Image (cartoon, rainbow, N blue to C red; front, side, top):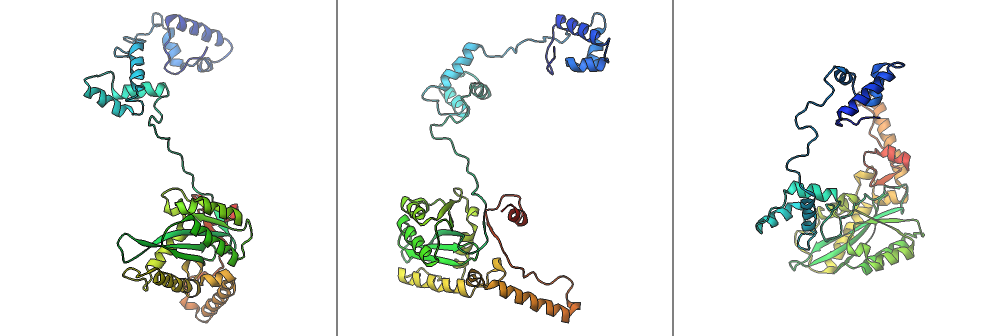
Length: 357
């Protein structure tokens, strides 16, 4: 026989345990025999003293005086399942009963009884919340592998009315591969934009993953059907988590903090479209992007950044040779970025993520 920690024993049990241990001690150490039975050597030695083999604790083994009876427990369960209280937690049931002049049990007792009967988990009538998993980690090693897109508001002269900028970005090169400005957010308009982009970029089925948030235009039936027809794989952020779509968020910040961004609202949709067209040309052809070693998105999209970075590294190396005393460290890192990560696994460095990819 083995004893659980804290288990109470009767006088008969102790006498039986003493006999078993004494028998075992003929061929084994007392400590081992006690360990097998589940008591300490000191406990066995205390029981072995004559007249000391009974539990001397006061009121040992007695049930609590305030323990609810079976009928009272059933009343707690019955009341908790009445239509008025069936979707409420104990913290709301108890006060409501008190307002009616009734006291059945404390809040903690309600909680304990409902938990023991598996009636505490999600008592609300609504569906229980689902666990939202982070989007799977994606890695781009060349252009036209991962696109990210979103919609942002452009102000109009009418308060509360906006134009909507649909903008798609290539994660690897940071190039704006497509954009449109419309009066409204519609899945059909987003589908037309993606169809145009896939045609211009000569995207093959299964080549591109398109990441976005959970807005209705992104998950609309027309958009999803079009992506399936084009062979574009959709990927979505978690609800209300902007960090899952960082590249689009960063691009919108760059757009709205441009010095040329109008301080006042756009007069009409044509002026909004013209401004976005000018911004797109500047961003793709003139903007030296910090995230891609200060080359332009178009240079990286076309593969021209490889030669540019080699030349920069050569210039810095020559400068160090000519004036070595001015260089306390290695030259600036102009190494080519061969992988770009979207939503990498938490806790992993880019090097580890690259190895996993």
